[in-house]
Image (cartoon, rainbow, N blue to C red; front, side, top):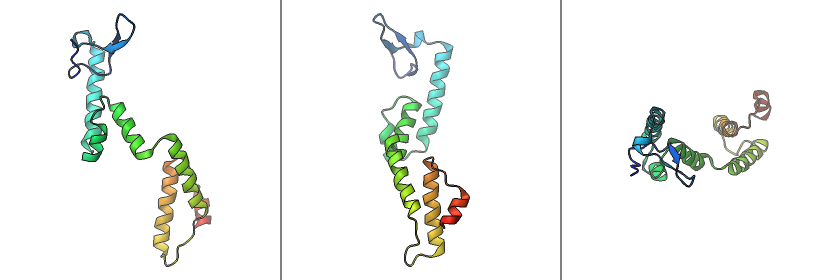
Length: 134
């Protein structure tokens, strides 16, 4: 009998047909148990900071890696979405102007937020280019 609650979710073995199946607790080695313990700790750290909406997204995930991947896609999007977003933000950067009635502080805050978003997507803008733009 396989007990998924107590058996490490990261450990599998091949059955007679060559298909990977979860190991039973009796089949687990000390290394398997360490993997399981690390997974439990990582899941705990990931889940502790989540609100109810976020938790509902990940509650069915069994490994810390699955939780991380789910949250990453939810917040950052897929690579294709990231590229599209980066292109759009760079277009906004290239066409950046002061809005009518906007103070210097508001403009600078908006400009900084735009360049920070670009940086988070991997598009680094040199400080000298930022100075020329603003």
